[in-house]
Image 1: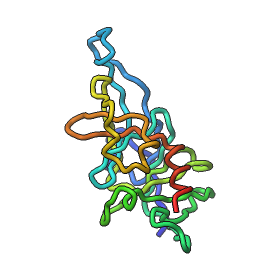
Image 2: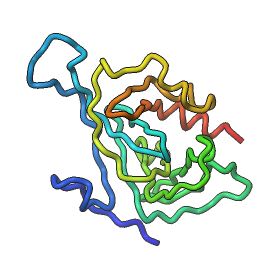
Image 3: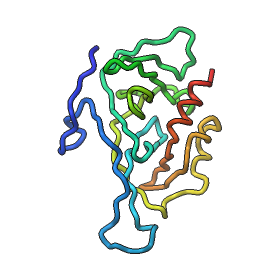
Image 4: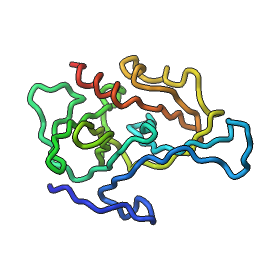
Length: 180
């Protein structure tokens, strides 16, 4: 299969097969309240099974579809393989086995970071914009994750009935590269 590409349009994710975007920065609510719990932070969130993650704010990310992934012999189960993306070799990981999930329909690879030095995670659905406030931040939200991933989460938020874990992508990819 060949990787297809089109730029995201203002109509949203529905028409995009390959999306390149810059994570938006802090936006303020219209009420101009000095209370910082009303400041909204807009980040892209994605799901892997029943777990929800937030991409780092300001990080370049791409949604990749129809990738040719070359599996690596004797690689750990979370290392899906490598893919050539515009001349850059990108490692493709899945968090499913580390999260205790067995069957997941992964339709997309989500590249975190520039193609030259990033890596991709297999995810269920297209990322969505998530509006967060300081008031929704949890002191111990990431205790629901496997111990292996605790050091890879900066903080967690409880919003709209889901716990969203803010990833430290560099720490995550270092950890994934070292796990056997």
